[in-house]
Length: 331
Image (cartoon, rainbow, N blue to C red):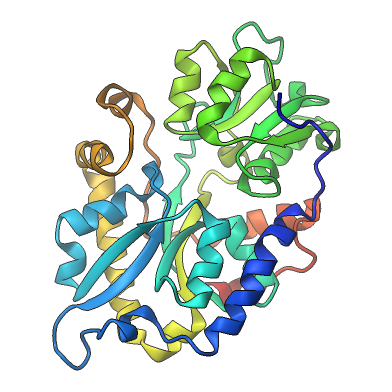
């Protein structure tokens, strides 16, 4: 049975900031990875970089870009290194371990609000904008009397990280449905454990993303909220980012990386069959699941404004104490 003690809102800041503080110290003495690896500037060859990315559906364009030679075409020799998410990616980028990384918008905003020099250079992944047809949602077990987001009042909901994109957007869905989000108890569980926890009755509901959303629905669960869509139909849940230092020291690399990512996003958007193919190469999903899951969107424009919606929700919930300059957050 997971710990059902009340959620304490400073958790995320305590989790990210110690690592980030060490990263800031390292930043002063660490050059960007491209320069360390010899780069392509002097030799004329492709520039070697390391990119941190969690191995989930969202980053299929990155893997497709590597697979299709898109990054090579833009003069980049890219190595993708797996991360556990934004909480790891932020300090790893600031310290210089990664040149770029994929991270959720809440982790990036928390870092920037605490004066970490993070800069978003490209979109990462965007909601489908369709209620009941997004790649993430809140589900309840078969037989539950909860039928909508308001019914989540006074309930226990599983999220993968406390004070992050999940509970921030779920609280918003509850409020939009006329419920009291302060009565909800969030517990932290890894996504792979959520379908079973839901079936056992350990939690009343769970916020899940693909492929765990499809797995839960196949087990008889019912979807009661599309929390990303409720926050903003065009919500970009995550982005590719780097540091201001790399932007200033190697603007050509940043331009090339951004161009390669954008081309990869477009390729993924236009070739869903290729997305499903590549998922079998870098995730542990079986072919049957890959064919059934809902794919997100990967647009290359219109992704900046929705980030403000998340910053506003984070301020409302006390996840951050001050809003960062959102204009400076984007390149």
